[in-house]
Amino acid sequence: MPAYTLPDLPYAPEALEPHYSGEIVALHHGKHHAAYVKGANDTLELLAAAREAGDFSAINMLTRSFAFHLSGHVLHSMFWTNMSPDGGGRPDGELAAAIDEFFGGFEAMQAQLTAATVNVQGIGWGALAWEPVAQRLVVEQIHDHQGNVGAGTVPLLVIDSWEHAYYLQYKNVKADFVKAFWNITNWVDVARRFEAARTVPPAL
Ligand code: MN
Image (cartoon, rainbow, N blue to C red; front, side, top):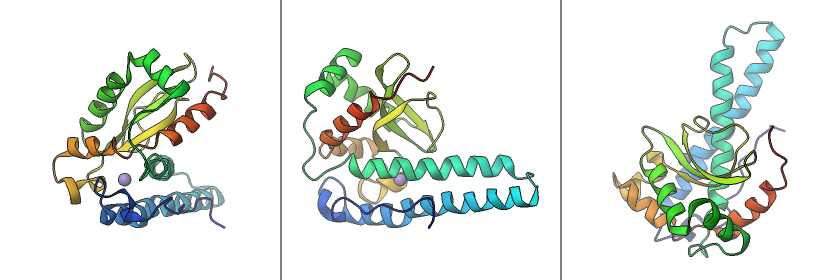
């Protein structure tokens, strides 16, 4: 039994159309996400072999590979549940109140997260995250899958900024993809993650 397995999509690939094409979702899940799952499992085996051989000459590459593939698996698993055919609109309740408190309003958070996502240089993600030290919501711009994040932050809502995430449908206009994403954002899922994240004690 491998350590990591590809989760099923929570909906049919074409369920998010017209905002997100079924062709992209099927490829993105079945090929890209699956490759990160395989990469994480393969890297664990290579690390075990390195320990067995007492040969850590590739430790830097293997450590980076594990972080890259594991984080790719985690972020994509979140990404699928962060979207829903019944999504869009705005959060309510405590999540809405927290967004108001820490960003000064929903539109301000949305603008910041959109900017963080659209302006990724190279490959990365935008994320709304819970920062447990100051107990506040923050927007992060993730490099690759694993870089440029504050230690201990808990992602709640993630938007894939890699070209494979949007190019077949939106070509070079990444901003239109992010605009469409807001029509399928699953705020119920984000609120559930927000509730769970706040039970984690501060990281210090
Ligand atoms: Mn992706």
